[in-house]
Structure formats: structure tokens, C-alpha cells
Length: 265
Image 1 (cartoon, one colour):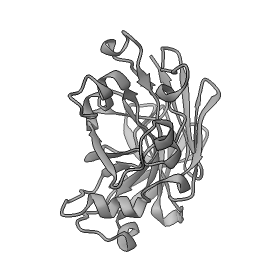
Image 2 (cartoon, rainbow, N blue to C red):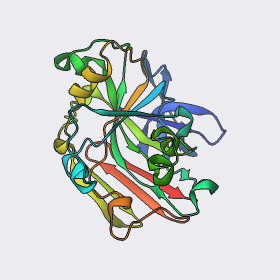
Image 3 (cartoon, rainbow, N blue to C red):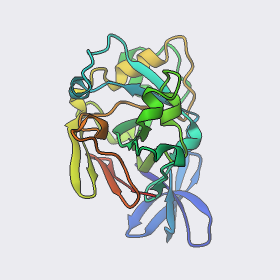
């Protein structure tokens, strides 16, 4: 199932599935309960993120080529950090560069596969991990590099958690569609130029391994979103570095899921 969350022409929010250009079939019910296709269609005025996450757990340095471009050794365990849930924004919404990130400009892009937990998960073994996945969507782990590296007390959360720094969408593709999350092409374009292009087969820790690690003696609530890491090609590793600026357009694409579009202001 392909699930979007959107605002109709009357300002009402819905879950549904896109049926044609700017139109969607409306669902009733709850994302984590029983969704029912009402058969009714309505216009899409704007998109919002397909869910409000309970938590956003993020994995750093989880692509072999990305670890190489940063000059760091492959991690022995997943590198875990978190983003503020208030950083979430949706498809076709703008990423806003904070004033404190303009002197100098430092905001970077990171294309990521996002995994959504469907039910309470604790001490889940990798072999059973897919029983706890609602579905997949696309994320951009937007990052203010100075705050991340030197301004956050050696913690990454500050540089990752400014408002609009977690675009999600445009849709959730549910796990019953049979997507293999460990073999998906992933790419990011900035103003039409390909900046990142890889496949999730380059992940150091697979999706099932991440769920086992994150749920060890720790409860993952329904609606927890796991950002699985970004491939090589990020802006700060380029020579010269490339950082986001007002007027930029970002297209984050993952095979079988879709394309997440965001402007920058």
C-alpha cells in the first residue's frame, strides 16, 4: 500500500493514496490500526509528512563509501544519534536555513532510507525484525555541520535538529509490498545535479541488524522512525564543499518508494 498524508482544498487533513495528479483516495482509520479505503476522492492541496514520529533514531557512518570519504574507520557498532521530532517537514515543503547557520553557510543534505516501526518492539532478533516494520519512506537528514562537529558539545543532535531539518515522504510504502530494504537504489539531486548515488546494499549494518541493535533492552514505540544512514557524496566532503543556499531544489529518490522534493529558503 502507498500511503500519503495531505491537506485537501478545504484545509482538512487526510490519510489516503494518490490516485491521479493532485487527487487522492481517502482512507479512514489509523495508520497503526485498520485503514479502510472509503472510495472517496478529493483534491490534494498540499502534502505533509506521512506521520508524526514518536522518535527519530538515526545511524551515522552506515555506508562503506561514506565512511571512506569522511576518512573514518568502519564502526564496530552502529553510530546512534537522534533528531528532534519537531524537525519533521513534508514533501514539497521548504528547508529553512537558520540564521545561526549562515555565517558561514554550513547546512548539508543527506539522502536516507527511513524505516517505520509498526508495533512495540523490544529485544527483537534480526531474523524477526521485518515483523515490526510498518513500511518505508524517504528522509533527508539535513545537517548543520559546524553545529554538528564543533558547536554541539561533541554531540550531533543540535546540528541535526533545527526546524525543517527532517523532510519525510512523500509516501509510506508498506512492508507487505515486499520491498527489500537492503537492495534499493538511492540518489539525491541538488538543482538537477546528481550529488549522491548508491544502493542500500552498501549499508554496513542492514535494516534487520539495526532493529536488533536499537531494540536491545530498549522499547521502540509504534511510529518510531529509523534513519538508516547516508551514502557518499555529502556536501561537506566535497572539494570545495557544497552547502545549501536559498533557492536550491533537492530531489531525494529511492527506488520503489518515490521522490521527495524540497526547496530551500
